[in-house]
Length: 87
Image (cartoon, rainbow, N blue to C red; front, side, top):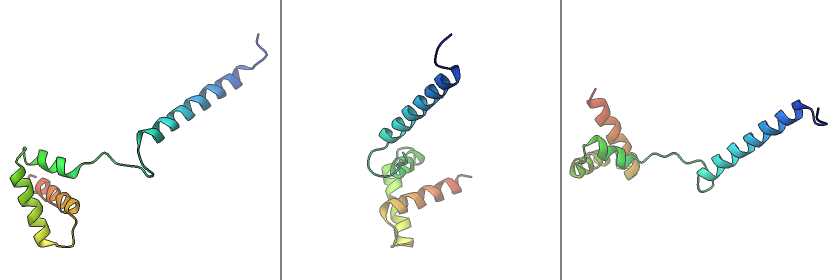
């Protein structure tokens, strides 16, 4: 047959696939840390059926309740509250 055993060929293929997958994962995220593809403002706007005024009112309401929140945190709280209300 061959001088190289089938076992070593299989290990080389698995290792190559592992390194290719690892490289793709690393190049998919930009920057230093892992990033989640979550856009809270976009999700809130979608939950408000495209009504920007409603989304802004909900964010402002959350900011009035808790002034220490960031705008993104307020949007997340508004989205959470909106989804909870729809149940």
